[in-house]
Image 1: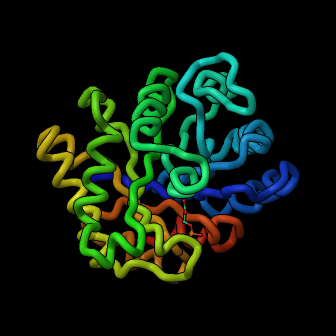
Image 2: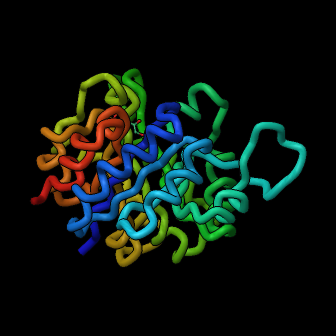
Length: 250
Ligand code: 13P
């Protein structure tokens, strides 16, 4: 059985004092869950958040990293730097980074490799635009993005990659893919992984859904056969709401 992994993506929100307060409110509400709980916070909040999750079951992730270890890359943060303070996870290739910061399938692939080299677990985002969806290209787009993201990884690394299927039209819009639809898209990603890496690996890979996940729709989504939890934006900014999502199975 794959475990459920529920990650918050705070995007460019929350000051360090707000992050610390949030964790104090969330921790007691999620302490009994069997699900993996991750908060992906802005760089500025990482250190404070790591201090406050000690002795809790909450894990901390970053939202991006550079693929080089160090060097003349003003404004960037490397995987080695993230690891040095105790970060465990890192989101790679979020659609907002692909859209606004020129992230490509090639840089996504390099960053995933660099994440593993530094002992970080990548959460890799794939997803189609509304236009691609309307043209009937969803499956083609998301399986290609997955294939290119994972290119050159060892089977063990593929097994340890978390994939987040986030249809771009469902992000921050209040529109959620139906549970069946999200499940089918996720199945097509799993089938592609099966084709390339075999059934055993495909069965083990965690694939989340993201896009307007809330307390009220989490159960329906996460109970589907192939949806292994969620990557949550807006609803992860409120501790009570996020706790509801984490505790969808209680
Ligand atoms: P929303 O949950 O706000 O739609 O955002 C989803 C997302 O982009 C998570 O990475």
